[in-house]
Image (cartoon, rainbow, N blue to C red):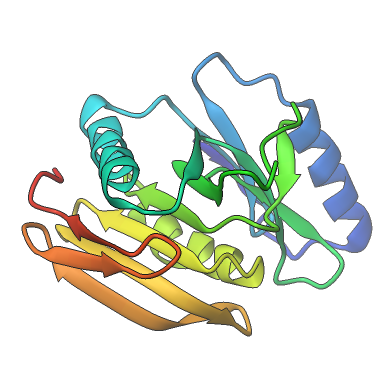
Length: 194
């Protein structure tokens, strides 16, 4: 379910949209995001979706020589394509190097500064993860964005963010190994992704 603005927003309209977004009382387990001028409300994810996240987190914990803190569904402030505005996105998984204290406060929303990688696993509106979130995370200069595309059965790593997009892309079909560079420095086995 999403609430969409069908006409371009004026600066005052954006303020009303942001206030409405912040005032939402979403049901338990649901999450609300503000993406490209749209309030997007998504239901709790299915088990296969969460299974993919678990398999990725486990491999990073087992294989990476760098210690990471991981949070599921962490709210991030992300710069908007419209100057002076920000979006609010919630990745399926967010990783930051341990010891930086990025997750030490109890705020629902935090800046993306210091985040090493975000992960999204596609659901019913895969195009949002493939395009809108990719650009948002690049604008926030998050170094790595891992997209597990269940429809295409691929794992794609976006790197080198600049000018609102990622400029290096590596992908593999499920079953192959995807190299995730430093600070992770691991070969992600995608054979168990579903």
